[in-house]
Length: 153
Image 1 (tube, rainbow, N blue to C red):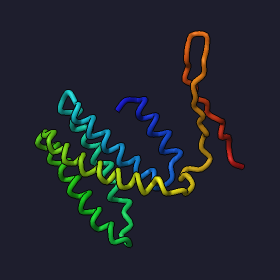
Image 2: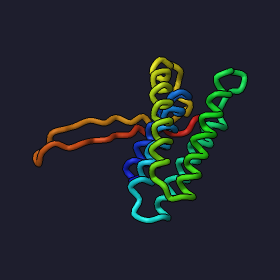
Image 3: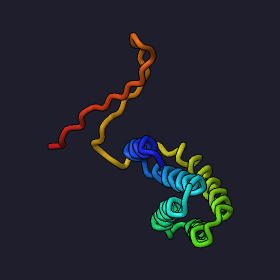
Image 4: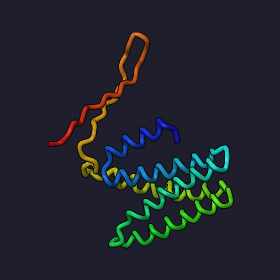
């Protein structure tokens, strides 16, 4: 994952509500799987898978077991975690494809649900980011402006 992508994810997370953070966790896992598949050596491959496993583990840890669906999701997350483990041990990218298909389907479902969630962002007192394109003497420029959040007294 590039530094630019990390900054984008950080910005999205800082402005997200609980549902959107869950969707972003899926997106991170999917990106790390892609990173592993594109890896040039075994260490890079394993690092990508380990990051994806951390995301799946986080998804397992936030399940609300008072909801019946959580038991089914737990089984799916465990299966996905095992696929990622096997892919790492065997250095087998085909197993990553199966894990990615599973996570992508769950991502799409949770993304649909998150689009209906109108709750406030989880993080309070964050910087507001304004982004836009302006025209200058040398062409088009992309501007990003952040407001100073200061301190809450």
